Amino acid sequence: MPRIIKNTQIVDDHWQVLTLAEGETPESVTLPAEPTLLPLAVWLARRDGIAAARLPIGVWLDAGEGPEALADDLDRLAVIGVNFPKFTDGRSYSSARLLRERYAYKGEIRALGDVQQDQLFFMRRCGIDAYALRADKDLEKALAGLAVFSNTYQAAVDQPQPLFRRRPENGKEAA
Image (tube, rainbow, N blue to C red):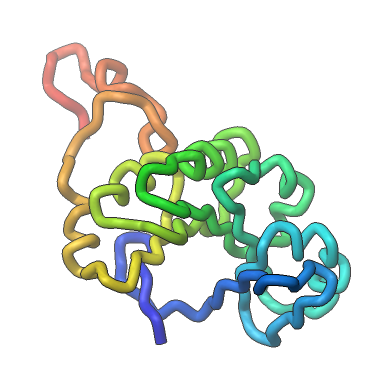
């Protein structure tokens, strides 16, 4: 069974990710009978039937797809994946941050695709809490990389106050 990093632990991944094969349409794809992250197009085309199946539901957003398409369905989704099709494509950072801050999504946000160790800290700052690393990456090393920085200057999803607002009047840093 594949493994992922979730909430700073390495765990078994019980979800599969569905992708459409060439020539397949959202209406024609066969839906698995197990927890699956569905492409946004499949969810939008078949949401009522999928929800009626009473399986845990997850949707993944490609880098060019915004979370506003899921705004009315967030309470139905256990997991939302955000795809990083290549290391240099950062659009999914914005999707994760919007899900947490604008839409107040409390469920799991999972990084998918070309996920590498040196991105995890920044992904966590944007609200991503689960990471499906590339198969050639070491999960133990990646997990250690999440603790590289003990403090941050800027406000983000994981720390809404900037450092200067966290400093007490005596000049000693607050935890």
